[in-house]
Each structure stands twice: as structure tokens, then as C-alpha cells.
Length: 68
View 1: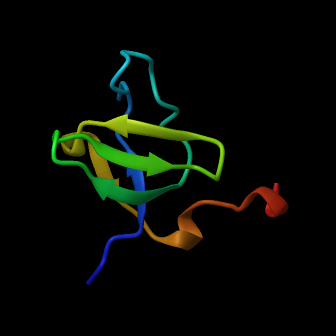
View 2 (view 1 turned 60 degrees about the horizontal axis):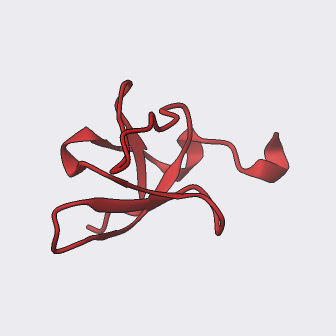
């Protein structure tokens, strides 16, 4: 089973130390050799986060931009 849709735990910070919005659905792109997980909200918004802060989710848990 592949995990494509993930969420992040509250208080998650990216590799630069900034908080990542935990209330959104992200796509897991990869887990880099450096140990960071690359997650993207869309084509313009991506973050490197600690994989320990990821939570599995289902696509239907998060509305798409067109549904908002």
C-alpha cells in the first residue's frame, strides 16, 4: 500500500524552523536521503519535514481547492 496523502501533527516545523499548517492535506513526494520528508500542498507549496510528524490520511479527509 502506498501512502500518498498525509497530514502533519500540530506544531510541526519545516527544515527552516517555520511552522507548517497542520490543517491541510499534503501529498508525500519522497523521503530524501537526508532524512527529511518532502510534502506538497500543491505545485507551489512544498515543505521538508521530519517524517515522525507525518500522519496517514485519506484523500477525502481534505477538501480540494475547488471545493473551498
